Image 1 (cartoon, one colour):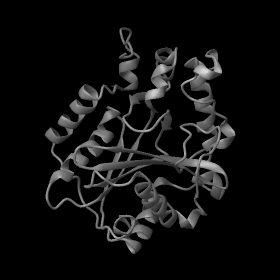
Image 2 (cartoon, rainbow, N blue to C red):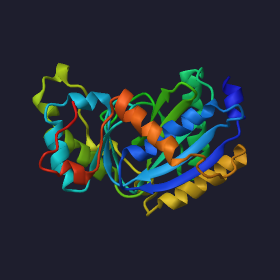
Image 3 (tube, one colour):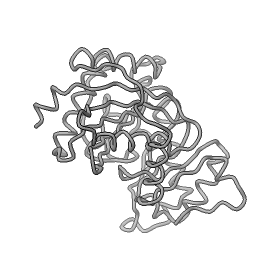
Image 4 (tube, rainbow, N blue to C red):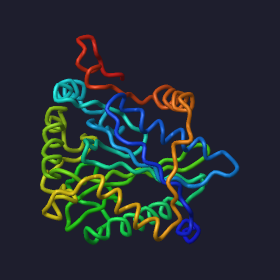
Length: 284
């Protein structure tokens, strides 16, 4: 199966930057996965950016003061989403690139899918150094599928299956400071009450800002998201067939996906403006 994945053609879709409802881009991923039921469905690479939000995991929902922390950060412009993949919070901003790799098969071996993503990263980011795969201890959203440059985590991967397809979602710190994103998460978890809990009861581990990096920090110069997207596309299209395409979705497709995510799966999605409302309460 892995050899088949390595030779799969992709459609390359870049849907741009989002600043409104934070559920919108992942709803597009969900709708694209649903479209994999079509007989001639092909694998897709979907790129997008959300500026700016806390991309929360299920474990973060157990933090005692999560509502208060989200309220405080809403005044700094942060929206919030409880997502359906991944374990813990990732901060998103205009310097973080999100990439979803979608396949029509639902029976892909987990390790094979991650190996393919690792190959895509290694090929696509080769101009910036050797990508190191594996857990970066004390990083935010820590896991076996972290990836790093020179020991500093620049991103991670999370996978989920749908009825018709498989989605592997990645985020890559490109612009700005990884250390500042790490410091943001240190403070976020303080405000959310993580360190008031007994260590054995904490839903997520502590974060040290020094573990987080970005491509710009690693290179010692300002690297833009657009530059990295061009590098990724050039490298990936040289190794795989990857014609550029448009989103093959209607507004109705997106709305169905949003209803599925926020209804059946129980995810929440709030803009910063919604959180700032005096009567706002976090959905339990």
